[in-house]
Length: 208
Image (tube, rainbow, N blue to C red; front, side):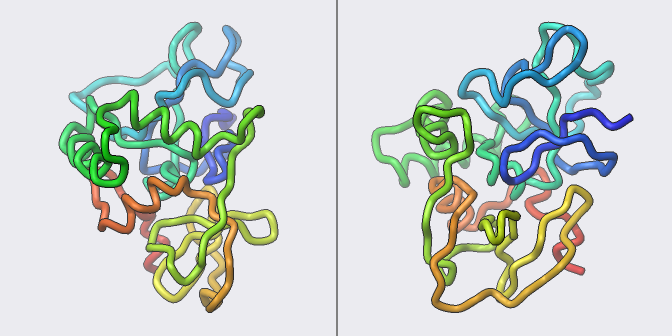
């Protein structure tokens, strides 16, 4: 039976048998029986390599340990509000820190990034995902927007419908529209800077 540890661009945790290309966590979200009880625990939401130093991550959802999460790709993880891990993706993390200093002068290091991201990804006074408004024409590849309640990936002149198994339906990117932006604005700017990391930014289905 699939565990409820797959993360959508809307930051929801769902059970689906499809495999993801990116691993991560946002604290311990499950109880001793392995049932998900909360959306997050703390501000440190990270995106990691699936494999690192031969570590074995089974069994999953152990009592008192962080909840192992899986994402279709890094664009999905970024939309959900996760950033590169400093341990298993050190070069990516260092590059992110450098970009962050340019985006937010005076902010440096994990705590500053996580505080900024938390304000951008969680609606004030709730635990729900926060959305933003943006010009659809201006968004870089890898950003996610909300259309008819569903997440769509920006990819060149197209929008691609997200599913847990990959990108499916496609449509032309509308011109001159305002969009409901899912990806936190700071991470949109990271994408705009040409972000490429040690994990897959986009699932192969984006290129089909």
